[in-house]
Amino acid sequence: MNEGSTFPDDQTLLVELDRLVHELDPPPEGLVERVRFALELENLDVEVARWERADELAGVRSVAQGTITFTVSDLTVMINLTKVGRGHRIDGWLVPEGEYGVEVRVAGHDSVSTVADDGGRFVLHDVPRGTTQIVVYIDGNSCRRTVVTPAVVL
Amino acid sequence: MTDARTAEADPPWEGLHGHELYAACMHEARAGNRLAMNRLVTELTPLVWQVARGNGLDRHTAEDVVQTVWLALFRHLDRLADPRALAAWLITTARRESQRAGGRKPPPVPLTDELAETVPSTQPAPEAEVLRAERDRRLWAAFAQLPQRCQELLRLTVLAGRVEYRLVADVLRMPHGSIGPTRGRCLQRMRGLLDAQGGSA
Image (cartoon, rainbow over all chains, first blue to last red; front, side, top):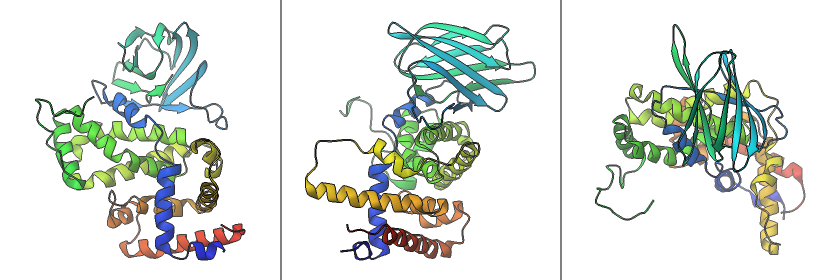
């Protein structure tokens, strides 16, 4: 028996690929729920920042503690997570700095809000763990923008 | 959530499929119906996911792209008049976002390495299952070695029922008549890779 006879025709290969793509590379568990959570924003007129992973090879998405960086065009949002009890303390830093509103949404909980100081820094205590989205309200002289991160599990 | 038929009537998209389902959901979504948005997300997230993965993104970056595409859709829903254009819009936007997200990254992790991550480790499998898993592994390895364009084309065309042939040609900017022959060449190449692996199934 060789592979040549095992996969003789296009149709057989396509059927196998159809199965394999769905079995081996399905959307991550919970992705649909995270998308739905992200869409529950009141105003969907937002820009979505990207999660910049420092170590691409690690490939680890869950971040128990440590720094996460999100960027969108000219704005960078850095957050540092510290586990405290059953929640997190989030130390954040916006670059370029500005006294912007910051909201942290966690699925199943009330959202927590604060305002960054003139150095762009903000701190939020007792943020519950779970599917989380950070929303930054930029209220500049000439423009008003809302930047959101993807909904991620923190 | 329960599946009981409560006092609320069935949603207007109940029982619909394909473009009719999209049309009904988009109509409701424009009026702010979150359930309609959720229905579209459930229906079409696998498509957006495959496009992102077919463009070589790792699973984490692909997830970000999927979320970005959906937020963009509902931000621009008013501009998308024809529900028939929905799938094409999602694919096109997902490709553009994927290429943007992938542009600043090192080459993607080979799919074969991620197999370990996605295949759950289970109890010792019966021999037939071991053989099948081995064959699947070889097929997947061969698929992962195909050029990116082949992988994308194959992923799109196996999503039967969700995507039409013409639409794939349009978003990949290929002449309609060339999809079949191109796909045939990709499959031929895959057979070559399988042969090169040698061994027996």
